[in-house]
Length: 260
Image (cartoon, rainbow, N blue to C red; front, side, top):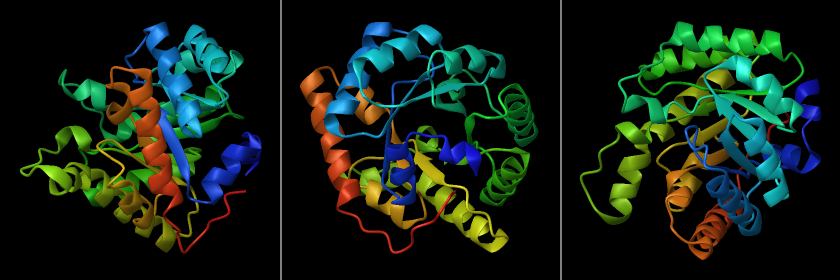
């Protein structure tokens, strides 16, 4: 896969080792100072990738603030080209979490259309696509396979916003992560049965306690947003990223896929 091979080498290795850690600043976060702080904390804490809103100025700010490659997220494909020109390594359709509170839901045909449009606009860019958690698990798997056929290079899961934990502590953290973990497990199994080797990134609702579960379920990495970007100080953010890095590095997956 040429697009995979065009990624920064360190990012390729993280995918192949099932150790990718992406820190998400937020699709609707256009605060430059906030993006700079989160990007710097992600870099100092040992993350592999920073995911920001799709804006060329934010891409430049993130690249200046850290040593990490940048992923830009949007549901408007026409915004991607300028962000790529500014230096973004990955384009992503999603994350959808910020839309649900507004009553905006994305169906399978819409996500597929966005994917096709994005691929036509940028045939050589590495494209990640989020599968809406609002779909039943079997439909999530079907959509993921359709997205692979349409030119997606990576699938991302979600579900944290729909989960309402009933218990405190670790049990509550597991409950919070259940939807996205279930999606990874189901899509990973579907990919295996279909002979599809696209990497899957597990995101939304994860914590350092549940990151190993995501990797065990078949994810090649994790995306972490609110656990980091809602913290108020730089030291807190760096410490959280380091704890997530440790949780990933302490997990040793049995299977390693080759995406090239």
